Image 1 (cartoon, one colour):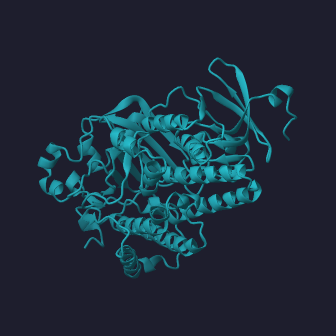
Image 2 (cartoon, rainbow, N blue to C red):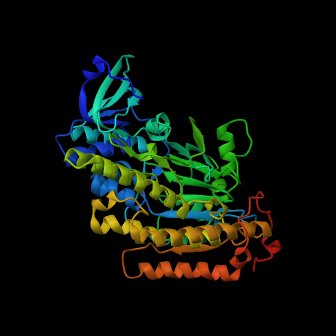
Image 3 (tube, rainbow, N blue to C red):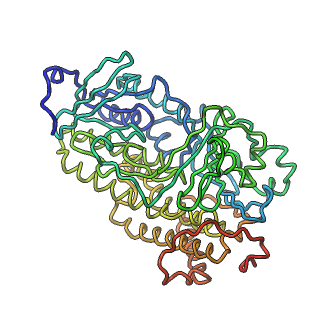
Amino acid sequence: MIPAASQNELQAPSWDVIVVGGALSGAATACLLRRRNPALRVLILERSDRFKRRVGESTVEISAFFLGRVLGLTEHLLEHHLPKQGMRFWSMNASTQALDDCSEIGPGYNVRLPGFQVDRAVLDEHVLSVALAEGAELRRPVRVRAVRLAPGALQLVEWEDAAGSLQTGRARWVVDASGVAALLARQEGWLRPNTAHPTATCWSRWTGVKGWEDRGVAQKFPAWAARCRGIRSIATNHLVGYGWWAWWIPLKGGDVSIGVVYDQRIAALPPGPDLATRLRAMLLQHPAARELMAGAECREHDVHFRANLAYSSSTFATDGAVLVGDAAGFIDPFYSPGMDWISFTASCAADLIDRSFHGEAAAPRVAQHNAAFSLSYDHWFRALYQDKYYYMGDYELMAIAFRLDLGMYYLGVVRGPFTAGAAALHTPPFTRAHSELPFRFMALYNRRLAAIARDRQRRGVWGCRNARRYFPFTSYEFNRRLLPRVIAAAARWLALECREGWRTWFQPAAQPVGHPARLTPAEHPSAT
């Protein structure tokens, strides 16, 4: 029960909206609110005096649209960050000894739609400055101590400033953009760990990393260098293994953000005296990392670890508070969905709050908001990520999944804002009535590929086709070929089911039994 307000609290300064967190999700929400209603008094509370360097991050098509066309940041992105040329996947097995032995999935030419490799500290500072230019107010550095929720009334926020003085503010709405701290979800008991997806990550920034277009590398592997017409180095390169993957994201200025993510049920960091040593040891299992990181060093005091990445909230909004970005939930960094999630949560939060100030009853829209994001998180996870770590390192299985995943993303998600505009971001993925069938299709092939991967592992043939293969993927476009290409990828999956998937059709889901046997190609019974 909320205690009665004191006289000091009743006299506290008042705003229309208080945003807790001034990084991308909070600053973007403030921008959207001020643009929709310039009369709103918006206060941003930011914990840091300046944003520290964070993990490098990639946009994909939705988040690039949101940053560029909705927030209007294209010039900033081009000047201070790098353009992105799609995604690449590098698989290995026991016979891959060198970089050119690794199998590659990636665009043969440069991609069609824009994307960016961003330095989040730089981006966050810029978006925050844009929010202030739009008329929002800022207090930093401050530490938010508590948020007292009062549905339908004024919310009370308490914070401590740099001098240690306790401040209080009131607002009709509070936006929780506190990131993984998830202030409201933890305070109110809404936080729900996703125990079905027990992933962990370790990452750092590295110097001295060779580029994928490095002249020496090209001279050493001329055929490998010549086969790709696009630019590999500014793609998000994924090194994939059994139960783990590593991201490889270049940043403006020369550093490279490199880290690993692994399913704790089936993979782990190697032992070692410290995190940096363990991270390097895991990366160097892969021939691509051994080649490109030969002289690389991680930034001192810039090695980070986090376990149990996936979580959500049982409540995404009340009549007075809305959660955005990582404060509302997180699934997985694979495919870089984090800023897509920001795009949808910030857009929907601004729409919900603005409509309430224009006289619409908040309670029905809050209920709709909660139902939509609960459904979106659940379907997003089950369609794309559940048990994916069993098969993402198998070249053949991942080549099928990538074509289907990306095709369905274009058909069901990307097409919306590029044809209907920013209003499409007011409906989170997998929540429209007609999205149930696509969701079930995606969850089915994801589940089946995971089952086939586990069966391959049991038979000792997992990853047997991982060496010396190359799939020069042609980027999807919004044309008449998009749907037929997705159907063709589905046909490849069905052919795989007929060839070997039938082995698992009537078997219960198996438990992991460790790493696949490290056999030579000749020892694999299905190597031919």
